[in-house]
Length: 309
Image (cartoon, rainbow, N blue to C red):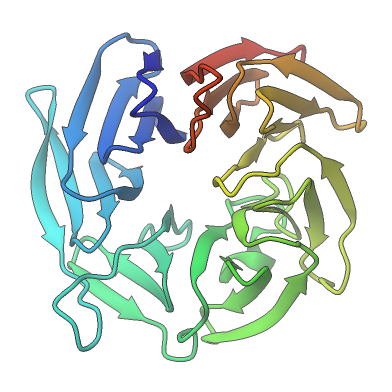
């Protein structure tokens, strides 16, 4: 799958065997994992994030209500909107990042100075009273069920563009810790799938991905090197075998195995910004560049490969 230079894939997600591609030109592409067919949805404003929730597709668009789609006759059709109004404004709060909560199956969304929980069954918005007025919250994560899920089930990780990671307890409705080490704004956070006491983080203009222990965030446990001197949002992914997939801004990608051995793969001549690694070693990456150099030809698209797990 390749796109033209003037409209590149800026973010990729794989959920429920379906790919979601967000493009620079306000488009959302949906593609089944084992199919060549894809559907395109156009919006008047940039799409911040999109996700699948059971049989629904949820999209966050700048200064617009959250749009919810349902699949009918093999097409995603708009079903409803969730109006989350900015205070003292006619505009809407659009989350930069959204995740599904494991405990309630509600959606959590974060953005400029807000963290909201969305109950889609009741079309209700929950605003945490104490967890507000933060800096620009750029990303969020909550843990999946595992051996230490009970300890962390009410814990959210919040990444901010001021380089700080906030750890908050939604049951107590308060912040309980924070982590500081990155030299750029936080762009991606992820709980360990095997043990929720651990999580990982990355940031803009930052060549390191850090592993943390939730019980003591005064310092990190270890770090993983990458090449990232771009302002573009770049993520990573880690599977249940603790194999870490990382994209680099020079068009390569790294896979760190559980023994910390690193393997390099050449993908393109453009920034590899989104990564998905499955438990069987199947990897997917997307690449593209926001600012084009006239002397070079930048491509955009996705690439898949398999590592020996």
